[in-house]
Image (tube, rainbow, N blue to C red; front, side, top):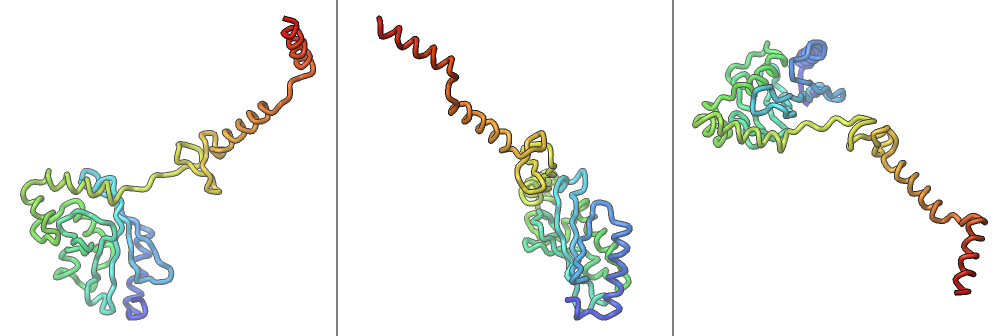
Length: 219
């Protein structure tokens, strides 16, 4: 937690986060927590040409009290089928273990994790099924990884105020193609129809109707 970190560790995190905001990593969006600088979370866009393409994966780094002398731990919050990610989301990568150095920054860690999405490593698998499939053949692994991505990591649809069946207005009401509430046109038509149905016939029409009734009685 933040209060357990040393002043120098907090300063390092602040510096790294500021750099990531001004010079973001391609395909990685760091999410800041103003209440806890040690709450490091990021969203990864699935890299193009990989089984994770089209997905959006949330990841977090758990910063321990011994940071930066000890590495953080990485976890994917979004379910992902990957040999180097366990069922609980723990990420297995050397930079978070034996290759860790205190002078490594958040940029390096986040970049290495992104590289895992591009080149999974079947030799150090936390997910045995994914590792086995990858060793037997990439196609079978990719097939299941794509399926899991489509189920668990699908990007949310972009909603616009004036377009498509899913469009919404600022007040949250559904919008029609013209930007008006979807119910407005139907409601207006309903009111008009109701008004038309309840309207009384004109005097001339009433007179003609009376004459027809008289003629029928004479027959």
